[in-house]
Image 1 (tube, rainbow, N blue to C red):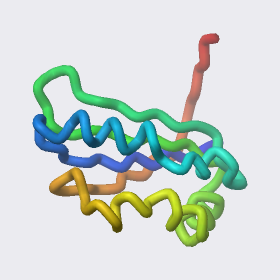
Image 2: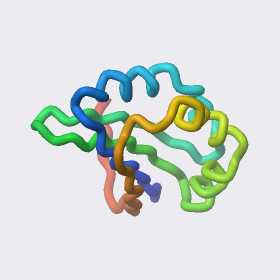
Image 3: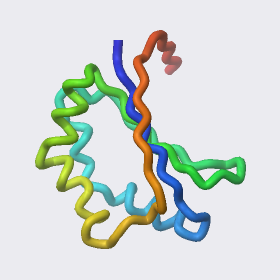
Image 4: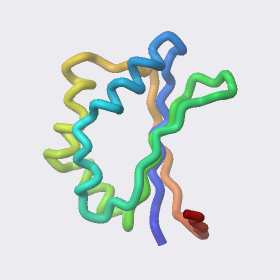
Length: 103
C-alpha cells in the first residue's frame, strides 16, 4: 500500500492568502516524480492556523528520492527567495492501511 506524508505548516491568518498564492504558482514538478500518487492542500476552516500539505507515494523510497531531487529544490525556490510564509512546519508520515476512493 501507499504511504502518506503530511507537512503541517503553521500560518498566521493574515498570511493565509499568501500561502495559497505560493502553492497556486508552485513549480508543479512533484506530479512528475516517480511513485507520486496524489496531492492535496488543506486549509483550516475551524479557526486553526495549521495548513496541511498531503502527498501520497508508492513507497518511502520514492518519497525520499523526491526530497533529494533537483526538482524538489526547484519546487521550493520561492521559500528560499521570498522567505517562509509559515512560522513552523512538521512532517508526519503514515502507512495507508485501507483506502476507498469515490469518483
